Amino acid sequence: MARKLNIAVTGLNAIDSPGPGIPVIRALKDSKEFDVRIIGLSYETLEPGIYMHDLVDKTYQIPLPSSGQEFLIQRLAYINEQEDLDVLIPNFDAELFSFIKIEDYLKSSMGIHMFLPTFEQYEQRHKVNLNEFGDKHGIKVPKSKMIFSTAEINGLMDEFSYPMVIKGKFYEAAVAYNYEQAATHFNKISAKWGLPIIVQEFVYGTEVNVTAIGDGKGTTIGAVPMRKLYITDKGKAWAGITLDDDTLISLTTNMIASSKWRGGLELEFMKTKDDEYYLMEINPRFPAWVYLAVGAGQNHPEALVKMALGEDVKPYSSYEIGKLFIRYAYDMIVDLKEFEQISTQGEL
Amino acid sequence: MKIKKNIAISESGFIFNPAVGDSYSTNPIGAEIIKMLKESKSIPEINSYILNTYQVDATTFEKDLYDFVKMLEKYKLTDSDGKEA
Image 1 (cartoon, one colour):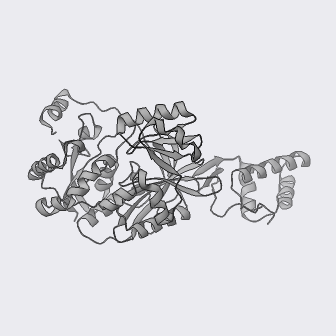
Image 2 (cartoon, chains in turn purple, orange):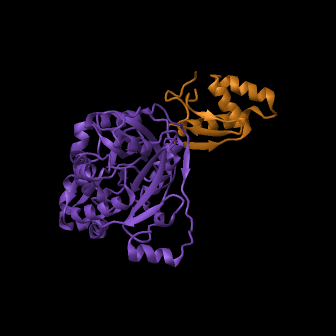
Image 3 (cartoon, one colour):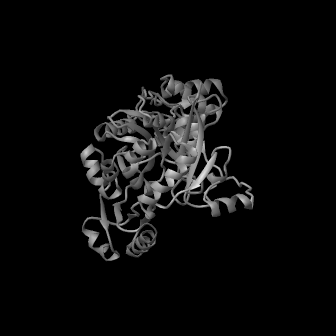
């Protein structure tokens, strides 16, 4: 008999640059072990997941991370009174800091379980610390440097050459082929995501990614590598395929073993024509394509829920190679009443 | 010349390289040639089989086979040594 669980999930923005919430929910709904009631947590009223009632049973707006942890705790206390939450799965990079800080409190005072990276892991894998992280765990990382002003760009020419990659601290990256482009990307990305900006050496190759989950003790519970087959203008995968790549799997398991990574993560690599792998980024949560892992035989969100509840999980030993995902766009028809309700009452 | 062990080819001529996720389509003759390469048949053996089985002149086929094999190498579907088995 499937266990009844109330699980809160963020990242309901199933848009062109999608959050992982909807695929995580689909994974949990697929679980044979759970009978889940899904509580969506949203930041904006037009996040499509709010209106996807076949997947999300009820949605509550929560305060933006910039509002501070006090407001977040107050809101979660209210939601927990209504819904008696068992597990909460945050899916945005920008909110993780707050949730990591209140993880113990939510468990001890409200009985809400999470399974997040530690604060040290969260900080170490940060784009600004990635070179150090690579050195520590024996993974090649393209040379990168933080800058705080466009005036610093020309001063980097001893260490960098064009093209170079200009990256935001949370999201977005663009390739610059000259100073003017670098300065434009700097201004555009910093206006959106703040400072610092990361300047990174450009590595030519094919982008290959891994979605994985670690148990916090050094064991990889699951790992599935994927190559993007179709990439949107925002650099997001619109289609992808699982790969038979032992090097990617061993890079992932070694990294999880040495860092004792706790929770879901995505590793983004560039594979050069000489078959060298450069770690471009570590996302400290599941990627939006995590449902491909479920399709290939590894239900990572299900494993995460079990570990959040303190249960031991047996590592997955295989996955199906050559499994594809193809994303699609879909127009939902929504009554104004629903939009009004989430806009005015903050719940739907 | 050997096709990499992990390369999959279906009856319809669909080729899949699971290491990089690339896929290709070939016609029935191409599929037959790849199948023979997988069975470790040599280039002269393949040449002679095709010339004995199909109506094609030797010069044309020799050139086509050379082009086809170079294409397989370019797409990294062959073992890296790229030499005769």
